[in-house]
Image (cartoon, rainbow, N blue to C red; front, side, top):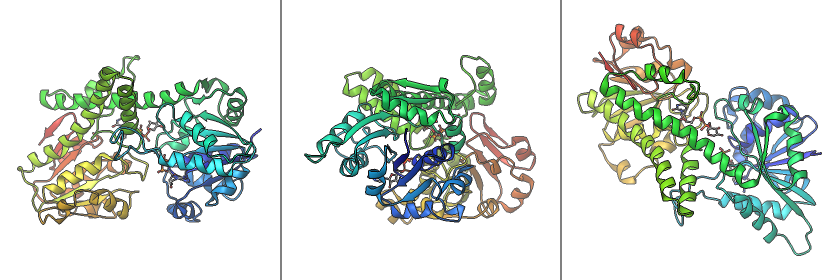
Length: 466
Ligand code: UDX
Ligand code: ADP
């Protein structure tokens, strides 16, 4: 029976996952540790608005469990030495340089976690891979664990793969009611111990047990399939705009086929988030590594369409605003990669805003949960020659929809936050320049109301209505 868990990495995966385990397993003591001490103090903040991760329902669980059986701390050594089970939930971004740059995952944080485990673990410890990882990483972890053990150290490690399937914005719901829990490994006893934890709230028929490699690969494949649906529907949006078909009508018509279904068919400015692109790149790298070029090419197309869709949107905006944005004011509504999260990793808003800034306009960006520092970090991480360029546009983060819209020539909806679904068009148009445009890249507004209030509207997968 597991009594003490250590989770390495207090990020978007580690924080919410451990909160839900703590809440369902009052008899297990959990220490969540991180090398980033600022992040740990944010998790310990009494003010729920200061938690480093925004997820609906998360603050309530933290309030209930923190200091009881859930602890956020920086003493990594102590937490590992006390643990029967260590979860690795660290970041695994795509490598920026060196072998596999642009495709393979950067495993330096996995390696340093494995080294810490090897240094501090006592007795028999189960290691659980939670981070999304390339296939066969468990083998690497095992090698690091044993090769960095001292000579007289008799520690024993069992490695399991237990990939995370939570989607940001609905993490607590997904963790509480998972479609399945996947556990891969070769040690029956270790698999049973992890499975016992989940059985506290997950029905047994939802727990799938596989070998290590199937589990690691399944995570990549699940994300690749979901991303592929988004790219498929996004590729059709352009065709609809050209032909006069309406993407919503097309979606409605195809999703009633129970074999297709209605999930992951919402058109948008391209998928973002920390997983989809990274996992497909991993799949491509793996396929090429095994000489399966055709397989690699197939998945590359999913990424190509995503990039193409993202570039298409600023081009459409510029074209409709008389081919020039110089000196124009643009209201950006939404910066997170999807609603209900403060995460901006790979957000389609970043590429779109950068392209608009190259057209010398002024952006006023409003997102309910993304703060100014993050927006600056995302938009200023570009060629330094661009920043020096006097012609480059300006941007600022504002605190409300009205502040963003006042004196603007156009409103661009980039994230599907619920507060952008029922904009008060008849009031907003009064504070805008004329002609007033709205570009809806998520297809969420009440278009009839916008048009009758005097807006020119462009909607994804439909085109322009004036
Ligand atoms: C994804 C997987 O869903 C999750 O199972 C895995 O554990 C991590 O990766 P996440 O990236 O958090 O989760 O969010 P998701 O809801 O999958 O959305 C990813 C991107 O696709 C977002 O940018 C979203 O806006 C976009 N998307 C999603 C669409 O454009 N249309 C859709 O219909 C669905
Ligand atoms: P994810 O979305 O996968 O959770 P995040 O970047 O949000 O990714 O979180 C990963 C966390 O892991 C970061 O807070 C980072 O500081 C932490 N981390 C990375 N390497 C280590 C390590 N060796 N020991 C402890 N924490 C680590």
